[in-house]
Image (cartoon, rainbow, N blue to C red; front, side, top):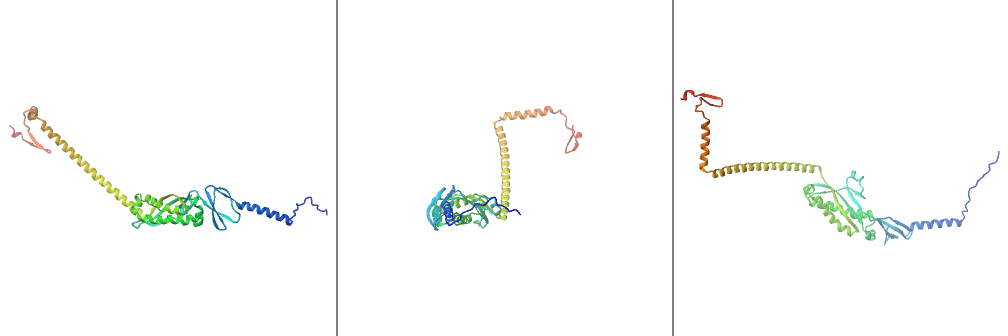
Length: 299
């Protein structure tokens, strides 16, 4: 049997202690470089902590250098952030950054309502170190300040308004403005810039909505009947005014005609009647289809 010859051979590596140390050192240097360089994206800042303590140093967008392994960073988004309350079925298609369920509360007169609202805000980059020291991460800011404070006021402020005001008037706008004013100072004290508060919907129970709609329909009916009555009154007054005008016109005409003229008109009318009569007395008289022969009485 012919022997099998090998026509190629694998390269050999000299894995002595010196080469291993060099490889480890090169890998460590590469690891240090990656650990030391931190890239901060636009619209973000990062607070540097050293061994768990906030240093007060804030990294701006772009490449930054920190002490590897000894220092770490906490990221904060300084762009507009949206916290939104909505129903479960509407949360999936929403583009809000933080989603929550609506606030349930009562009106001044005891009607149950659900408040759907949106808060738009941003983190003040100049207070990022204070936030890291006193509140925590961005999610902690939303949970401890934005969510807690907005839900408290969204529950309490509508209680000062009647259900009818919130349903038919400008109550939702007033609630929206009052929530904004209540949150503005608290947000500022905690390093948050409040941009806007929007009440998207105040949802009432089906029973209340039905009662309000029935009341509105009845009000429309009453208004319609009132308008009809006013129209009839106007028409009556118009007829009276017209009749009074005609009577006044006749009175004025009688005052302006000379008595001799009136006598002449009477005599002219009488003459016209005599001219038309042929001197023959009627032989029958009657009314409503009944005739009476009076020829024997006429001489």
